[in-house]
Amino acid sequence: MKFATKAIHAGVHPDPATGAIMTPIYQTSTYVQEGVGNHKGYEYSRTLNPTRHALEKNIAAIENGKHGACFGSGLAAIDCVIKMLNPGDEVISTNDLYGGSYRIFNTIFAKYGIVFHFVDMQDPANVQALVNDNTKLIWVETPTNPMMNIIDIEAMAQIAKKANALLCVDNTFATPYLQNPLDLGADFVMHSVTKYLGGHSDVVMGALVCNDDELATEMYRIQNSSGAVTAPMDSFLVLRGIKTLHLRVQRHCENGAQIANYLQQHPKVAKVYWPGFESHPNHEVAKKQMRGFGGMISFTLKGDRLEDALSFVQNVEIFALAESLGGVESLIGHPATMTHASIPKEVREQSGVVDSLIRLSVGIEDAQDLIEDLEKALAAL
Ligand SMILES: *Cc1c(COP(=O)(O)O)cnc(C)c1O
Image 1 (cartoon, protein in one colour):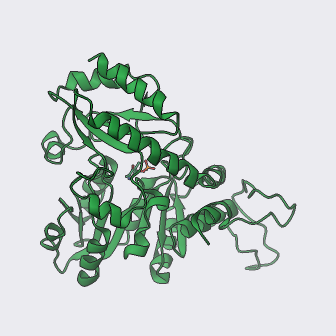
Image 2: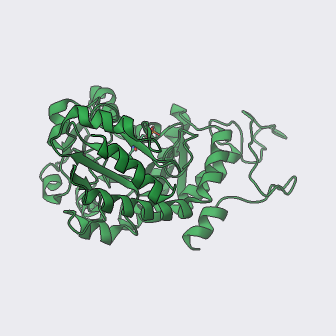
């Protein structure tokens, strides 16, 4: 089955009791058993809930995976992967990482004896140089947030395989419509479902997908044991969101291309970060592993003044100043003071998160309206 058909049909069936075409919101914590151990596959909703179950099957299908698990947030999904490790194990991750991922690695799991390395993964040799017998996980985010760097997933899979380590790819920015890490050799794909999969800025949720049966057993054991599961109502909303994922992402890509090109030629803009440009340092890798370049764009202003960036993000009207991304509405953010505020200034500036860096999550409104909005705010500087 092709993507659009899976997005709409995978995992969902008309309700056997009523014929309802939409999966009901099974707002229940428990399930009546006919006799001890004699049940219909559901015992308790932390372990499994029918609405969540339908969504888990749907997300697994659109990531070309066998097993899916949904969590109370993207960070809860990350938490599950790191809990597969033991004290002394080492993780290699990118130095241009979502701030919350950096925070859970460094302030939660480091104190349990797990060792994290952060490195520029655009050159696979940097990753290879850190591999040792304790390396158990390579954690990739591509495109990266907010610098839109592209990391070669197949190259990372080769390094991971040789090192006998797991490879997990945070696929939040690309979405399964544009990129499928499991097909490129990853063991796990992770999503902040909050973003494009949900797509309507109304749910916080995370997901993991894998193919290996043993890894799946471990994933479900931790999901059930740690208990960071997602609710039936939220599962319903995301099932509904995913039905239009392909249409939304197509438009995000079209609008993203128009806005990236507009910014690129603007005299007040210093640099535009978007993997669709032929001049992007890893454009060839992006073309190889992605089917489109998305609607996430970062750029800096000439002069690199903090006050210019702060007034710009307030002067736009259609773009809403907010954390998060991936919804139908356009958002604007200032990484240095918002999403990446938890990363020390010296560390963030090394990876390009300077004071005037602005990040756009281009929505699916009319592209011309969005460009006029940016034009007015740039003119006001
Ligand atoms: C938002 C985000 C996360 C965290 O997900 P939550 O749903 O906010 O917990 C992880 N990775 C990336 C790339 C994100 O954008």
